[in-house]
Length: 167
Image 1 (cartoon, helix red, strand yellow):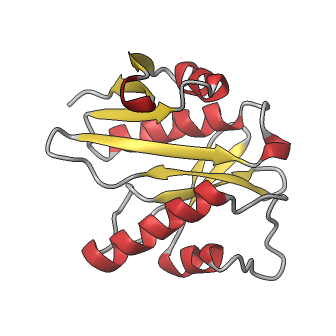
Image 2: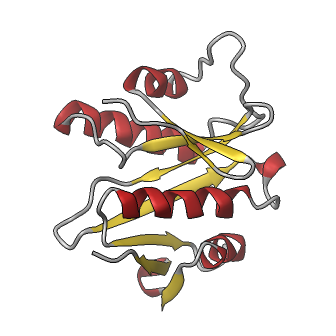
Image 3: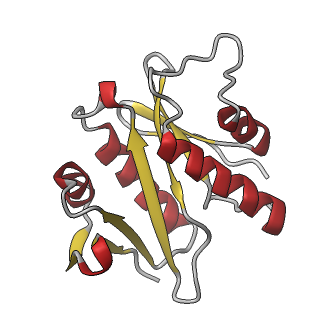
């Protein structure tokens, strides 16, 4: 299945294929491919590993996959964003994201998250959820800037956010 990259003002969200995911997991960029220092991080490796397992067990997840966050101007990979899986019985999906330390604070995560909200809506999800450690105020701001609202304050050790996407 071919999923197109999504362009935002400053970014491209590049949908990983299985072969690309395997290279990320092995930390082996292609010649000429530019990865920012710190990519892939621990979160990227966990996300890519889960994506590869889902593909092996259930087939291609379509739009509900892992995406690299690339700077539009240079192609530099600065992080990742993706779905924890396809919509559940309630139509909801969960998202996770991360940007390498040297590129944080520039609004890339909020811009990528806003684009992923659009991807989820277009692919038929009814709500998108995210969570963060209670001490991770930066991640809370990312989700709020992208239009998500706080729905819990640390029950179970995480602050949870939600945006309803419509049916």
